[in-house]
Length: 261
Image (cartoon, rainbow, N blue to C red; front, side, top):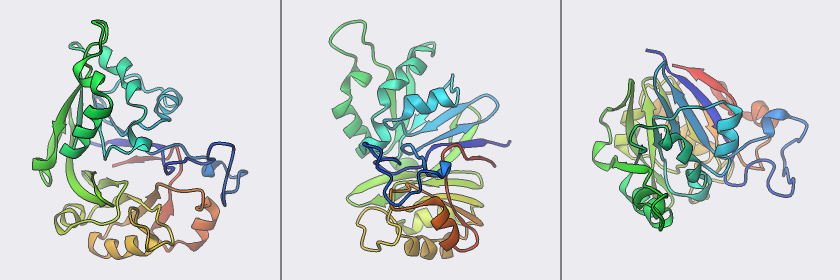
């Protein structure tokens, strides 16, 4: 069964342009440099999953006419990946029980429940009912998880002091935000055909939380992905500049890019 993947956003925490219409080194005349915060849409004929709901999620969902969500997967709890979480209310209300399942690791669950407790426990008034139910993935790394008719395999990633979650769907995998992968995660990824991977480290090998290009090249010697698409693109990462400097098999992402796998 083929799945469709739509890149809702591929920018880093500031987006491009950043607030104040600041473009950094990105050419404002290149449409592919306009980037919202990271999110990925995964669809089969009957099931829709979204990975991360950043501060641009409402705009992304409207632009792509997303009228159904069956589950949300979170990579980690940083604001550029979760601060649109309240916009899930409309999708939860469409469920028969008013509850939308959310999958991620245990540390992300704890942080989401601390900051957005009312979405899980309900608010101070009876009209504010719980709308999200969490499902921890820590004990399911390397195992197939099924939502509707979509199967995926979660794996652990290191993102500085944070542990994020990556996701493999058949021959397609998604790895944002991350710096390192352990041996188990590399094995889970091995042989994937299309790999979307965090590259916000760019040319900074000393970046403590994001992978640099050199680190991605080294990782892919083990993963052996046929096509590597770079995400978490910052103000320093101009689309045409990256096209000219990347080796064969590596490309920068852009908002709206779709894949079928």
